[in-house]
Length: 118
Image (cartoon, rainbow, N blue to C red):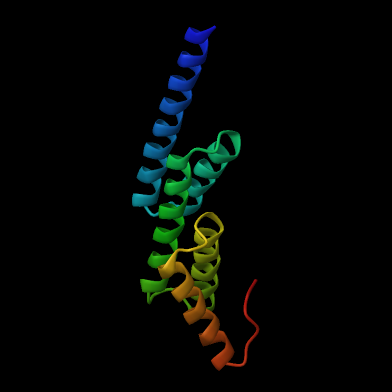
């Protein structure tokens, strides 16, 4: 029985590592939604600290990419980044960078007199 539990733990760890590696490759290719979805599915099945960290990193990468991309229209850029920063905060409520950027984006919407996207 102990051997079976050990094998199960090792297999789960390897599965998570493979999932994270595949997702990171997709994120590097800027296939953010594919990579994030893959991580979310794995995290829902077996929440591990490594998967949580990978989700935080993937959402931060997506948000930062959209914020820095001047070729994307502002309404798409800010809405997408805001959603991704909020996802970071879902997994890491104390993340200073995500909090700061959420405040910045919300401030932009307020200064334009527009409703803040949910």
